[in-house]
Image (cartoon, rainbow, N blue to C red; front, side, top):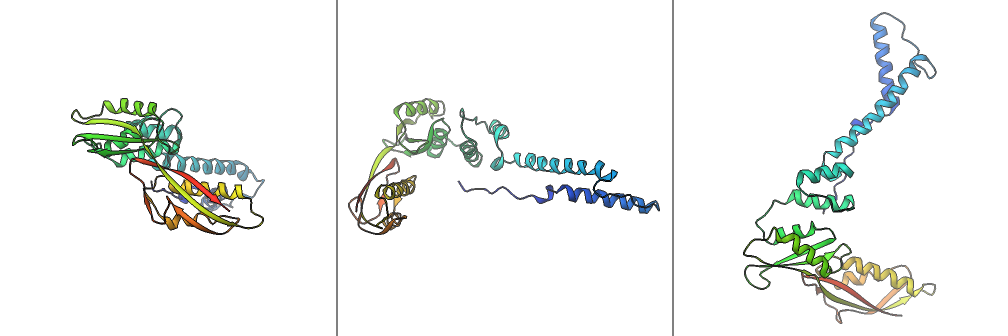
Length: 271
């Protein structure tokens, strides 16, 4: 999902000094219109003590108004306001689901019209089930009217058989009568990365390996095409001078991950 930056709204945000100065200007204008001497409004004077706290209160209310205004927009709503958007869209929060995950599901619902029960609809319905991180639906996996939905958990790993059954139960009420529906844990697609590292004398091999592992695992998440050169660039962490003998699944070509699979890493490092 594309990140949506919360807008800056300075028109609703004033410092108490600015508000107080406008009050002082009004007092001065009123006194001039009456032919009177403007009152003293410096710090410690009566009008300052009366009006400056009021200016502070107005400034705080402006901040609350800005917050309340933004809560009316789904991309920036949070907490109970986000729940209200969910009630409007007919999509409840899953237990203690964090705002960011819930908001992403709500945005997906808002941007996608309810369909007729084909691939994209089953993917969305599956992602709405608590515990599901991702879902890929494949049409005609067995015959013309079949839908296979492959799911992952919120850690990006293949969903358990128990989670698959929960999703299957939830989807049953939405299933079109002629569809042969199956919900399955995503397949595991092994990715073996082998490399020889040339380390600096002060480098700690275990620390370097852990950093490279984290880099590659982050790269693999959600990707269907693994680019040989891009993975190679991930070896150049702090402590690595160079690398050699690098292979990706035994070769030097790009690798395609099946759409129904999750890539799992086996990193083989020699020094």
